[in-house]
Length: 237
Image 1 (cartoon, one colour):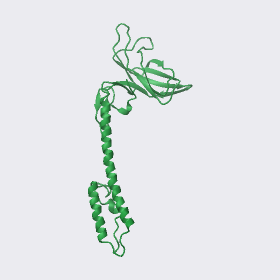
Image 2 (cartoon, one colour):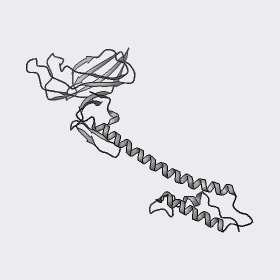
Image 3 (tube, rainbow, N blue to C red):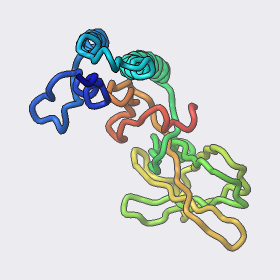
Image 4 (cartoon, rainbow, N blue to C red):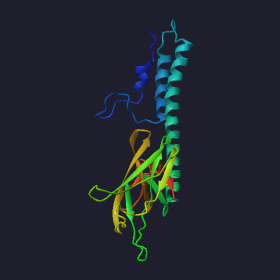
């Protein structure tokens, strides 16, 4: 009688039949201990029914033991990774909560103009910024109104690679000051010689709270802006 062999197909089915709707029989929900029990049962059965004149080779048994140990090891590795992920999420939540009440620079183009100074007529505008992969000879910033019309422009001069923030003085092209309690937007153009390329702007936002999501915590920046992940914060002011 030939020796039955517990090969990869048998190991794939140790978990038992696939649940309804599963694409194949390998998708089980058994624990590592249950897998080991089923494997040992199959191995003992194989040893009991093997042909005495042609017993199982030691190398075959070693290979089968290595397979079940691999399955168990992968399950333990997945458990460890899940635990590490939970610790990382907890650390990110703690880090995010420390930003509540802080101003941050995040991707966006809006500029909020505050109350006008009754004496000077000047206004206070929230900062704008840019995150450059490489240095530029100059940066032209166009301030636009609600309808997309350019109401003011200014240049920054040479900028090195990295994050830079600027403050618009609120002065319009005609010399007057912007209306308070109004939202404007910034458009940035990087200049290198004759080359002009668009640059993604950053805008200021105040962190109001932390929102828990499956993918990690998000910073609540108020009704005027969508929540952002910690990785989107380019600068803390």
